Image (cartoon, rainbow, N blue to C red):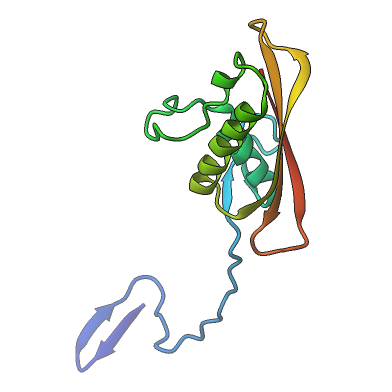
Amino acid sequence: MPLTSAGNTITTHGRIIPTKQKYEAKSWSKSAFGLKFKLDKGTPLGGFFNKISGVTAIKNAVKQLLLTTRGERLMLPDFGCNLQKFLFQPLDEDTFEQIKEEITTSFSKYIVGARLVKLRVFPSDAIGPYGGSSLQVILTLEINESELEVFDVEVVIS
């Protein structure tokens, strides 16, 4: 739209932005999101990278931490627990204490948003794929923001 002022023509394109705008404050939740593992195209919306949060995200992170051997991740060589080295050791009290120490140190370093309430380690009845014994690890966790949300994560190491 051409504007004229004192014989000069000024052409403007687009829309004129008002000088005063009213901004509304939006509330943002402090939810942490992560990727759902295993990466697959199983959602109706499509895509390989599905977003998860809350209890599901924490459970997946704990399972990934317990099932990863230290040195297996390229950019995080200290990530994981070396639980598979305990499979061929005698399942006595000393071994269980070493397993608990391994899990608690890795948990405190890499899991954010949850607190470890109870840790239980049992010999599993199943025979592992290499003929050794299997271990069943059950962690009872509590979400940091909510004392009412307590849940278990169970992993079998074979």
